[in-house]
Image 1 (cartoon, helix red, strand yellow):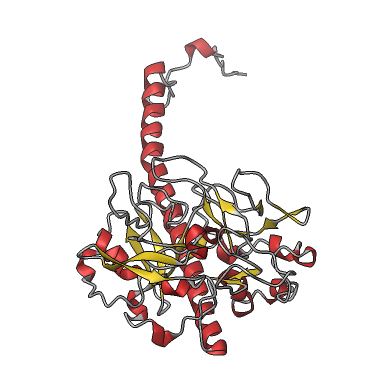
Image 2 (cartoon, helix red, strand yellow; image 1 turned 180 degrees about the vertical axis):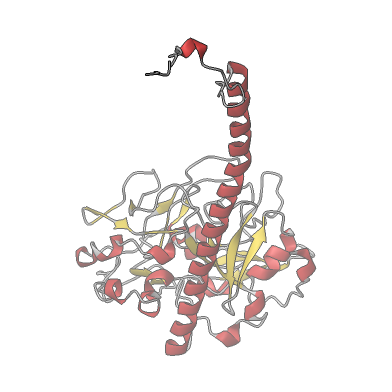
Length: 374
């Protein structure tokens, strides 16, 4: 019988298929791949960050639109826009004994500001129902309500915090009223007082100087006696009662609300506390602590009582490097959002024409706006 003979070959004898053999990366190839990935990630990250900032800017714009809409609903109900903040009226500094008043500014109770007044008209009735509007801001019964965080009043691009903060006095320490501190909810949005400002010593002055013509730089003296309406040329100020018909420059051409990031100074939706001061979070040649009204209001300039270090009137549009606690300030790239009286929202660049900004900030100065300068 014939048996076939099989030869068993060792592995060494097996033919090598060089085409199917997989070689390892060399160190140089690996470094090249890592470098390419690094470059791609470097190119991708700015795009991702840009997309995120675009989304945050859109959310901020929507917040301002909701605020403007709420102010229109308020005006429909009360035939006027909410006051910048409420204060016991006085022409000589005398108020009832039960009223807390700042003897320097004549700011007094109840202190409720435009932001708190808009709560029932902005689907925030749960917070509004907790507030005793018949009592001052700092009343113990309002302690929990005024520390509430309202998402509509927070810009997602703002740094510096979104939690409640303690109201400070002129020295930068926690303000105390009747032995109690005042902690208020934060806002990244403010209302416009116009070109002129009337807070601090202006609030209690007998007379003041205002700009009569921003183009010629002429001024005039006005009687104040505690009435901020004789100075303010914007829609919101102490005890303001602005109606649509008062905005003779046109609601579509008048700024009502804008941004103020906490990175510059702390603002609140609640209102104003007598004796309080707003302090800058960083220093610049032109900024410093300012009176309580700047907790919720800002102005554009020029203001009769405000000059720069060269003696010239200051106009400070959004993000202007004076960095006043009484100006608008945004952390969006290239500018910030503002809401006009007609409810529209526009993005204003850091390079907006100064005179145009002043024109848009007043409501009844009869300026002719050239929108090509925006």
